[in-house]
Length: 301
Image (tube, rainbow, N blue to C red):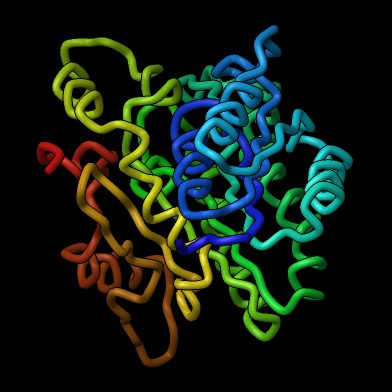
């Protein structure tokens, strides 16, 4: 059991991928803190508390878990959930930053309020929770962060400027945590998952999207859990600073930014020589204006 007696905090764990990760971690012996405030896809509060249902499932299988309803969107909420974890279980070994919301809109219609709401939960929230947990991991001699990002942040998607920016920022945050935490035994990795969940159910049901929706519906949230649990476990020692993606039974190691081509000109450049020399020389290596569905066009395997 890879997570025997380890303590893992999973945010947004009441439904979908977060719930699948929480249950899978419990099956591997982890003590799980199920954080979920119970909100709609766009972040508005709901009456139900899905975290309690997940805790009941874990306890029913003989595991240990507690529910938490602090908000990741506030620094005080992040500090409170980590404090509650320590009060109940005495330690925190791993954090899975999964909580996220959507406020999709084509860019020229995206409001500042919707932008702020998405960044506050998806990016600031991951920072707040990671920052609250990191000192305790350092004192304990190590720990692991797993950040659930999105291919929208890696490849791009229509009408998802705020969501894509938050997830791209989270990938960069993960790399920084990995670099800064290496000497303390703290690891940090990302997963860009694929599944049919509340998040992906927001894809507009248009003729252009129907094939993509049919693909997504084949992939259940639990397909993403094994990699997340592995990365959160001591078995992943030495695996840090990486970006992975999943699709059904496939796992991908994603590229990170590196130079593709370089052009040198004695005496430097002018706008005219950039136009005449640099851009024509590099144009063959330009990335096409593709979206996520163009990068992963095949049927789930």
